[in-house]
Image 1: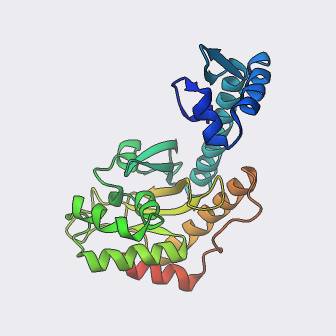
Image 2 (image 1 turned 180 degrees about the horizontal axis):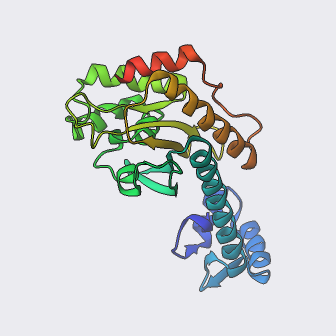
Image 3 (image 1 turned 30 degrees about the vertical axis):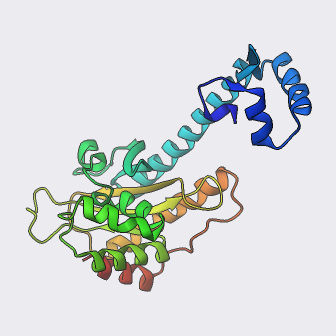
Length: 251
């Protein structure tokens, strides 16, 4: 628990959180302090320099893995690739790799969003949230896609079932500024995905193109999951019929 707070934590709180007697907790903390895994200030404890260094190295290793995944996606698809997490309901870039095609979506267009529902990656992460929270996302930005709540609920449910997020340009958008996005979930631990990885194309993708991109994303997501210690990627490889259903839902 010391790793998730910047504040010093009293012995009594640590003992209560870990479910051990204070005397046992104190003896364990003495050992951690001696090895620089924790520090003790007047009976309250913080993460020690040795543990902090390990945590920092682990975080950097994680970012390297995500950057490697987006690099692979950009290389195989030619499109700009991104890894996104949902923090406080807002999509945040974790890794980005520019596309290799002659014409690609720039970083600002690929990552900036007024709403999680503006991006394919954000839409997919919202889909994996509690469905009871979906109306809040929709109500905050009712102009995104111009869909009513019932339509959004159906789209998000389809994305969740398929493990694919999709954003297609609205018919009223200028072709010069329209862009498509495709995304798949990425896991660090079993349960809700920690990120979505995806790519953006500077035009409206057809269903066949979405299928090709979805396959590349799935391969990258599957490799990332194995690299991070998951035995099995939790979503099946995209099929033509699955992508066709997602595509129709997102039109």
